[in-house]
Image (cartoon, rainbow, N blue to C red; front, side, top):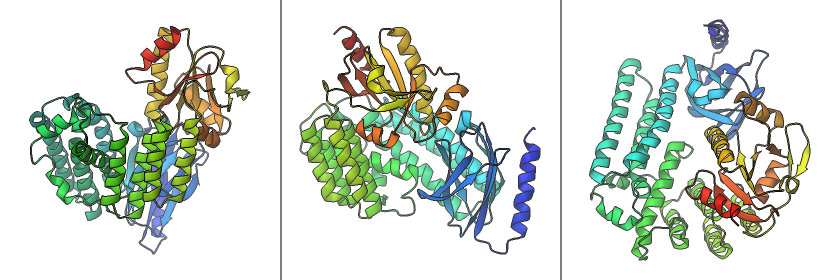
Length: 471
């Protein structure tokens, strides 16, 4: 009950502000941040920054959104973010603890019910992902029964919500789409997560109507183009349809995600299906970056790059990918790790080479990927016990002051030993082609690259370590 009075005070402030306003196309957003990582929150709409709002001395904020464009807005704080649905005359309060950002987030005020509904769905979805991975090993008919049951639960939940609160058409449009996109995505991932490597046989085992919903998919939906669930679905859908196309001209029995042919099929499919320039460019960039960042064959990367350049109209994206490919060429096995500087949490500056006097693992983390931050630190703690002869270096990649990442480490009782931040994050991330953040380097005692694209969580990672130790 400690925060009842502060939030009540803010609510009264909202109401008084509302009564002073004669216009209707606005909304208020405010709230309280527990254990703040910065002294501000950032509000965005469709990836465009609306404003940066400072926290007061009690870590609260209040902001009026004028000329409201109803839909999802995003608030960001300390590398974390979450969405909220704003409609005219909403007065939405949020409260969260940065130590458990999503899990602690609750809304109150006008518009709270719909936003708490979406947060509950978001948390349920995170739990569901592990379950989907498990049941994907079932035969198609049994798998369908399980995901149909999950879908029915979501539909019933939405129907109960509608009966009780009678929300707007906009809410229902988004809520129903979220349910559908989740359901479709669960179907699209099945061939990839199913344990069999002969994906062609898996595709052929599916019921004829398994993908019937594809007939009604809009690949150029401008309304949902900035919505995460829509974009995740499109990526899975493109990957899956491309799998069929790939098998139409390939005899590969064992599927290889890094196959040049398969990845070119994805770019060609996007070019043929998507006409909306923004959606097309985003998909082309995502798949091209995903391929080149995980592939060290420079000639294959150039082929994919040429395909991307011919299809994309995003000049900025083209420049980034061309530079990333150049960086990857400098990160081949056997080459020296490129120079870059890091800072420890005592603000001492080091060239990375000075930290490597033994076989070393260099991993990265960002506040924007909170789950990975926790999981990777837990994983490294386990590996340190098993492989004491290897040095483990962890580097924060955020373009934020070191005090913020230091506070996050301290809040989780993590040691500062072998923890660093990049002196120049933007340039270092490009030099090291750090995409995605799970990318891990293995370097020998002479600062030679053993692997520039390992993953702490992969099944082969410990084999790579043992190979280095026994070398």
